[in-house]
Length: 317
Image 1: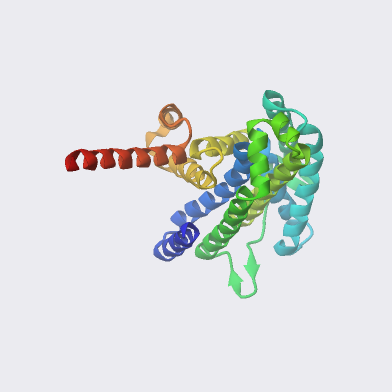
Image 2: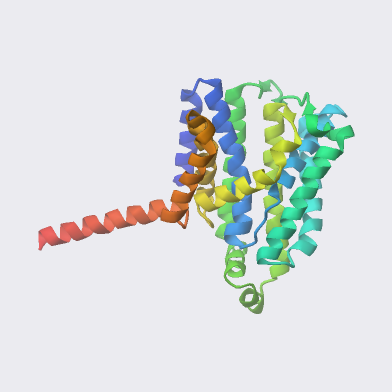
């Protein structure tokens, strides 16, 4: 029912919007939702911090850009190569990194993110260096051209829907129960017979693939990429989306990504004070809704229902 409503909303929005800028903004929300969704599976459900997901985001973008611009590959052939490359690198990174925990894991993944950024910037022969890589082709599928803002909007949100359904299935499965057990206590989970190392590596790789998919979609949307789009601040922004939307909440990823994508657009009116207002809003949200928007909205709804029931009971008595 909830997923059917989601599909209906996307269909209605796609048909009712006509402004190209609004389409682009909604498409960026979809791409950011993919990033937040993958990281939420890792952070929110498995309790593993990552401050380097911008590197996987950039890996997906640069892999398809290099193959399509320098080697004239079809983007649809570049996509599986980008995904396989991400799986291999994420697996190699996860093997030593997920032996760490807490602050040390955060620092380790931060270091990986910085290495990725430096490679994107310094490997200029292929990446274009600081100047970036131009001429990335738009996507086409037979007679359908995704150069159209509406078509690209539907493509991105179709990918988001598939990933949402996949995450819902995972969360409700034995894997999801294992992830939550690791989040609560890794030692207790291991004592219950859960292969914690394997599960942590699998969810790390899955979250990296989501980031690479987002990078692929981003590169073919803007047709230009540069290292600045995949730096440390991008990793911090993805973590903020997860925390603001609600940890261990699939739909919270959508809320967090929507808020942090749209908010800067509305704050442009504050000119030089934009970042101050932005920071204040985030502080207020975290002070009054420390569990994130999703939990805050659910608590407010339950509170209103309880008050209404109490009021009705007192009137009847």
